[in-house]
Amino acid sequence: MATKAVVGRALRETGAALKHHTGLEVFTRHRPKMAFLNHRPFQTNDTFIAPTASVIGNVTNWDESSVWYNAVVRADSGFPITIGFLSNVQEGAVVTTLSSPKDAIDSDPLKNVGHSNATGDGVVVAGGEVGKVLETGFPPITHIGHYSSIGSGSVLVSCRIDDLVDVGDKCTILEGAWVESNVILEPGSLVPPYTRIPSGGRWGGNPIKFLGDLGDGAKEGIKKKAEGRGVMAKEHTVEFLPVGSTYLHLEELEKEGKTAIQG
Image 1 (cartoon, rainbow, N blue to C red):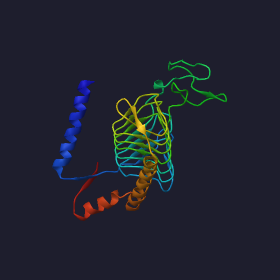
Image 2: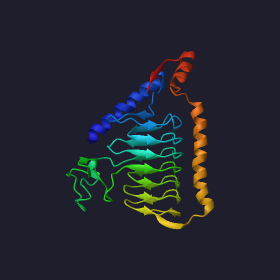
Image 3: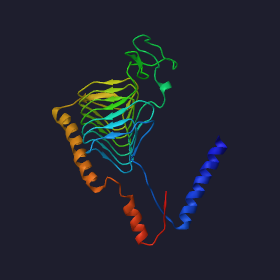
Image 4: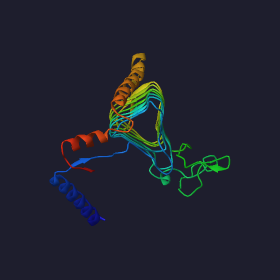
């Protein structure tokens, strides 16, 4: 495997070097939205998904929500992701679900409490299987409520973020965690698996700890921050055509007499 990795890297670097020395201009056709396993991301007509973002699979983006540059929202393991009204996933953040069903408990929590192997039938509701579950008994979805902000570089995995939550930059929130409403997480905080963060407080640290109660001004600031991002998203939406702007770059290169290839 090590030899294969080294050879693959060498080939990639050689190809990049050849492109550079030929003098050809390289343009990209990055797709901000991508269907996966018959699930296509859903967005309303006022959702902003940045041209360099990646929204993949069973993702629902509600009104005026936004996914910013280089952010990744990836629902490719059979469990959905929801981003609520006027909520935002900022630059470079990653929102996903458990990478494979084996990471969740594969059983009916009403009949097999405590069972933790990966060979059962999943959650049984009305005689049908609806998916694997966490130790809490809930499916490992990721839910982001309304007026919530997910800071730059943060990572969310199969967790629940309620309404009016401000997640600081580079926070990590792991599976089964629940952050209730009117909460501020300081930058760099780590919320361990199955941790509940009660409403109305400021939390921070690695691992997370309580820092103090939020006043009315701080709570109002959470909503204003989300609304500010919403206004910014509208401004960015105006600047980008629904069909993208790659062709404009290509036309500029052709006017300059340069040969372009797709990167």
